[in-house]
Length: 418
Image (cartoon, rainbow, N blue to C red; front, side, top):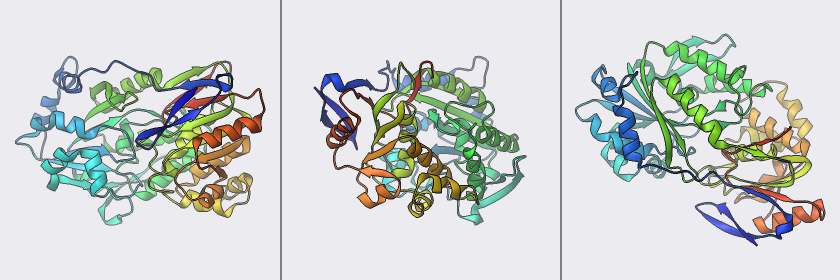
């Protein structure tokens, strides 16, 4: 039999004997309503909460709209196109919340906003640069010692609209909500201080209560309590269409989306597998730094000593190279973990997670990266998914079976009884 495995914006066929196939886990196929109708009805609903029109009418000065960068599947451009006419006669500015990622180029801006909206709001779109200290304002420090710096446009804004999507996150619990600001438009020093907390075992997938990363971000959000924030939080289907959305108060809309996302992205498994193919589909295949999330989730379904195969185009290479440089300098996963015990640098949490996976089993990879770069990250390179799967099953023996996790970047396996 053949299985189509996502690769870049298409797929590649993989032939496998049915007796060796454990399972194929795909994102759930869900009924998707007309997106414009869904969003407009949501924003017009004023039962028990402020409507979008009321938010706009009460705005004082410029409304700052924060959207995700091109490493996220959030359909920001579609939402903006749906609500664009509501902005007529109002002063509105858009900012791409890049976090510590690089400032997007023109191609990525068109990917984020869509061509029509990019052209319509051409002179009103900017991108956050976490390393530009001149664009940052200091707000204070959290109880965990994280210095809080934010973009000056956010600091001066009275009214803020946040457009985001909610998915599981391997150390913040979930994306969305507060992440539009922290790390979205935070300073590099702030992001680094917060992400250092990801080394704590309590910073985990689906975890919010007791998660130091999340709690630190929420404390930072308290420093912005005087701002009027309106939030549109979405849960997407496997084609990144809007399945469900929530709007209004930031925390309330985000927590509603989290509850919905938990039932959408978590998959129950009866067992772990000898071989797991973890696919980072487009656009989550942005680079190795982002594709690590697929390895993280895939490892949850892997037997100790098993083989975890990453499938990701890694279209933009390694990404932030701090984690890669640390791994390249280390001879073993234990050496990586030993290095991190000293001074923390942003990106080390990625290296730590990869090192822990490498201690449990083998990591193999089908990417567009040079072989030597994958090997430096303790990932054995393969030229095709077919060859990697065949080799893994041969290595693990005749009774071994393989699990295909087709959207591993945002699908979280939960093994019953584990």
